[in-house]
Each structure stands twice: as structure tokens, then as C-alpha cells.
Amino acid sequence: MNIRLNPSLDADQLAQDFAKAKRIQIRDILELEAAERLYRCLAEETPWLTAYRDGGQDHMVSEERLKAMAPKEVQALQQKVWRQARDQFEFMYSCYPLMDDRLKAENPDLFLYQWIEYINSEEVLAFFRKVTGLKSLIRADGQGTWYRKGQFLTLHNDYDPSDDGKRVAYVLSFSREWRPDWGGFLQFYDDDFNIEAGFMPRFNTISMFETPQNHSVTYVTPFCGNRRLAITGWFRDK
Image 1 (tube, helix red, strand yellow):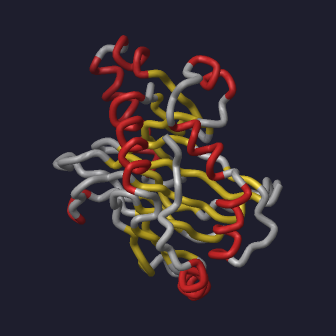
Image 2 (cartoon, rainbow, N blue to C red):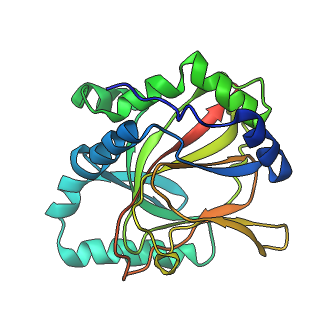
Image 3 (cartoon, helix red, strand yellow):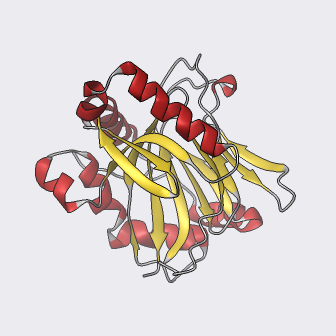
């Protein structure tokens, strides 16, 4: 199956919308058949890892390792991350790093890799250069993400003093029938940390914003009734 952008998208209008606040949410971004196939891959085929931050260090553990841990150990780890999130940047979510060569070798036929090939095609890069107005974009990366109950990404702005080329972040969402009360919003803040905007998870919808911008993924509630599935990453100029 080939992945294709929705041919009815108006890049000129989208560029005008993006320019207003350097962020945008575009619905029905892909042709429906491709969106359904990516959803099935995320929902049924992806071998998830759990990513979290502890003591300023990033970690990833496999589903198998988590299942082998005693329930009390898993609960203690989650509560430790929650405590640290009170005062500093922290996160916990399920992920599949698509740029990891080791994982690609282990799962060469995973359909998500077709998204990485597609988004890096000249046709698609040209479309997003036009929407963002950034002619310098040369490539994109990505990872599968699944924010489960109790998971989150605290406020940050994606600024990197090493300047690693991140220019526009994206979240390609595949969440179905989401409710606002479930959390999981991509939320934006002004310099006084008032909420400026929030993008709800929606099926076959891409949310994009130029970096740096203050943002977070809000806590997914314990009573959430569906899965916050997405492919996330950055368009880069290096």
C-alpha cells in the first residue's frame, strides 16, 4: 500500500493559517486507506517500549521487561516519575523509535517505516516547506507514540543549545473518538504560562508547530476510554 497526502489539501491556505501563530492542526491529512493502515500498525503490530525520564536521564524499557517486573516495582517507578514531574521536565509514554537501526533490523517489515520513507520524499517535504514557509527543511524523523493512562510530557519548548536542526515538530494523530476530559492534549503556553491553544487528538490529523514554543502533552486521565496513538517527530534543516 502507498501512503499519500489527501489531494484536496490547499497548501496556500494552510501556509496562511500556519503563519498566524507558527502552528496548525490539519485534519484528513492522508488518504483514508493509508491512515487506516498506519492506525492498525500502531494498534496491533508495534512492539512498544516505555520511555521515561529519571534524574535528568532518558530511559527506555521493553514491554517484556515491564511485564517481568513485580507490580509494586512498576508502580514505584511511575510514582517516582510523577514526583519528579512536580518540579522539573519529565515524561512517560510508550514509544517506538523509528530512527533506531537496531529496531529496524529486528522489525524490517513494520509498516511505520513506510511513513519515514514517505515523509522524506521530495514531494512531501516540498509540501511541508510551503505550509511552514521554511525552505531550509531537508529531512524528517519520527517515532510511534502511545500515551497510556497516567502518562504525560511536561512543559518544555524543544530548544536545544546544540542546535540539532529541529525546526518544526509534528504529531500525526490516530486517536479515535477522543473526549476532551481524557487529557492528552498538545497544549501551548505564552510567556506567563497561560494556555494559548490546545490541539485535541484526532484521527488522521497532523498538528505542527515551529520550535521553540512552550508546549506539553497533558496527563492522560485514568478514565480515558481510548488510545492516544500517533507518529511524532521533527522536520529538520540539518
